[in-house]
Image (cartoon, rainbow, N blue to C red; front, side, top):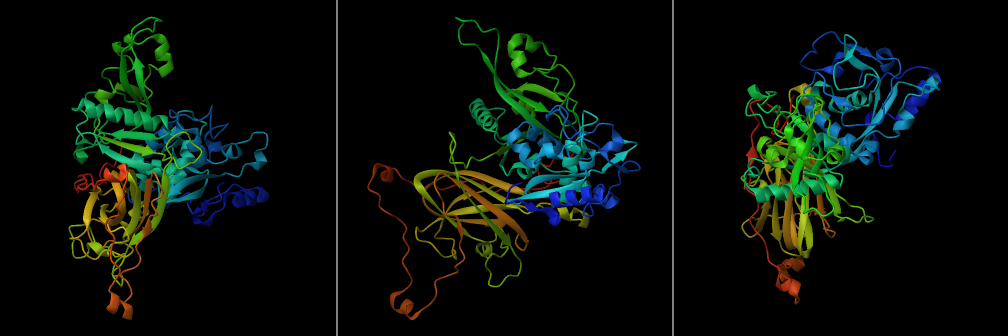
Length: 559
């Protein structure tokens, strides 16, 4: 276990397990009991629920059967396709799932030493910037002897059902997982940085140049261990889970399991450069219902691909929920993609290394003085500068910065009739090079970037910034909303991101005589790099995305 891992509810796995073994009993979790309160707060399950341990469901239970695979998972009677899709993505990356399922061999059933089994498991999640260890017992909800929720395609494999139970415990109940986005679960599994891309607004189905740029970007993310999911946004609650003519499900999350350039025809020693297709492979968390268009499992297009190439691709002709599409068809049929990057911060890497800085903050109500107040977005000019303010430096002539703003998870409040994400975003201003005090006026500052304002848990922005000092102001869209947040900034060189805590310089007798310190707005650099420097302004248009008629957050998948 990592030294920085926190125990959820102060439950320590190894201590609890040893107590159970010593007392020769199976663990029963008092923090997530086998009762209705752990299942639901509003909607009853479709039948009488019995909580059963794996030994009561099969003769030879295992955590894993023949390893772990994205094909292991099947969604149950709960609208958490987004969670199951994220699990399918996770199963592709051994280095990632081993963090989520720590010491998996030690947790496995041991038929040779049954006395060492205590009915207790633990999983680790990246919760709001902190790795958190969650303990669960092995009692699982069933109806008529069958698991209700997420389960494996192999009857005696239980890693997915137990992982789902641990995640439900974090959320407060199984029903709290009804509706969400795959990006949220992937962040909780990995600590990744999530970027949401609107394929329709980006016109990726029309602009071939932008389409190819996106393909290369996704290919790079996939090769470097990132996780990707996609969906088709529903226009209303009535078309959620509706199947299109091409076999795709609206309002449903799919995991991307492969991205490749597929070679057509046989390869010959003296042949010309072979034609290649840009292809993408996905999996439906239902384990069935596949794309039926070009390059579907049994389509004649596969005759253009050699047997060896098909073998390399792992092409299977069966209704297992996994299928290939051309990237062009993918851009035309899907509307949203969540790209979760595992940002490389290691100094021992052949790939680009980023400098990371993370700070924690909160928007508060009725605070005195009005600092770190919930002042609302830029539209609320009278209160906007009461929001928390953070300063950072760009030390290169130009630097690409990655910014992730994440609000506290609200799902735990669903049982109280709340639980929706707040609409959040942030503004970036270029300021004086020696700025150490909070901003009090806007008209003299240069506004250089604005994130999307959206009611998702995380807001992300990539931006190329010129050398200088910047103030970043995270906000809720409306003033008066209290919640915590974490802000992560990735740059090429250290940014020294820090909160502006000083409101204004102290007044002294010297201030009367000498005035306040002068601001430094420019440093002359007599070099080719300095002469080429320029300030960039503009930025992305502010946009608040309203919730759909389904009542779910924007982009949420509930199927």
